[in-house]
Length: 478
Ligand SMILES: Cc1cc2nc3c(=O)[nH]c(=O)nc-3n(C[C@H](O)[C@H](O)[C@H](O)COP(=O)(O)OP(=O)(O)OC[C@H]3O[C@@H](n4cnc5c(N)ncnc54)[C@H](O)[C@@H]3O)c2cc1C
Image (cartoon, rainbow, N blue to C red; front, side, top):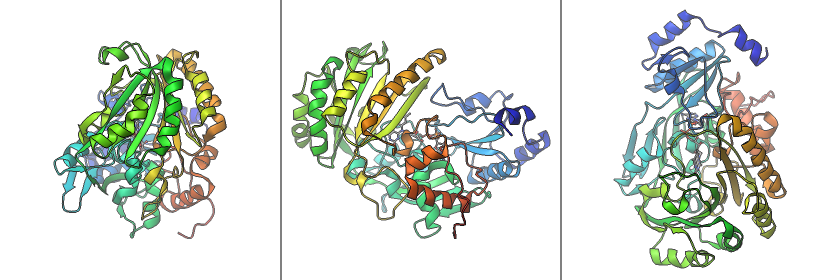
């Protein structure tokens, strides 16, 4: 049945079924007509709303188990949402959304330097708890995203990634509800294939309710941003492109070409400005950091320089990502190199002489520990990629197609250096929506293995409202 026909046919469950679910689940069970439905389904990207037939606000792993059992029994696809920063739209075509926002527990074990984090915790919760013990988890550029979704998608930290690898590499165990509605635990020794697949395969294998991962002993770092006038981007990035690959693993960097709005919340030099934002962080002393950063500071005259010694809690100051929800379209892909030719193409596509209206076009340098397989390998597909790029344009819904055109122009300009692999967290909701693209994202061999795990744990593809790995049709022997 087509999606349209399915929608016209109405949901696969009856009001009695919903009443039965409400009687078993402690948290709210909401339908589109309910007043609290819109808030429960809210996403960060206002252009990608999520409107399932039913939403269950889980208060425990048991609630999640009841919701998954209900969905599987009634032929509904299950989607999961915490902070809502990477939702593949879930429409009312027989789908059930489980929200984890009520599960915010974070426990720190100082003796083992580990954190146990529930599915609804965000990075600011985990950073706050860890800081009290002098620990730092491998958080990303914005502390407002959820810990679990971030970690299952690899988890690329702009502070700790190059020295310590992906957040996924530090996970000890995962508690989840699989498609059969059973609460299980996967570890490197118990259900090791499931454990491997979850870390990189993201929401494809179940709803994760809790994870434990190791943190690093760290209280401070040296970092922040240097903002240059956008007109100087070619000269500054000509220095960046040879400087970045030579940095030690304790240092990380990225840049963003930004056309910022007239926003009073921004520092005065950045309001309504076209800027190049070079980000930098260093896990060492200030004098060493200053020395490392000197060639970049000499590459132009910054209009703003925020690089300073900071507590780990200030990790968000490296990228200064927008916090409030906004309507946008985005694209992202890997880059095999960032050469003089790549830079020339970038400047032509989004530089001062271009008609580019995109708010941000960013390139992150990877490498270091991000290239190395962890002691317990996982399905993260981006090892060995030297760079990733990510761009987004913000607009009212009627102007989003215009932004899409410019995203396509940008992607075409950098296509000679593009790599289909990416950090899974940076896949846009409307990218990797078919099996061919998802296979290209993971590479054929890894995809084949993921599809075999999917067949074992979710043979009917209950968890399909995501960048979907389909169950393999061949016998798996698992
Ligand atoms: C401004 C911004 C900055 C970012 N910076 C970084 C960065 O520096 N590094 C990085 O790696 N990523 C980064 N990301 C990406 C971000 O980490 C992912 O989008 C992450 O999934 C967001 O978490 P969330 O709680 O908002 O996810 P949601 O949007 O709530 O969920 C996204 C998906 O994650 C999966 N998921 C979430 N919770 C569960 C669960 N309990 N069980 C199973 N699957 C689940 C599901 O597939 C779900 O569809 C950034 C995103 C934004 C918007």
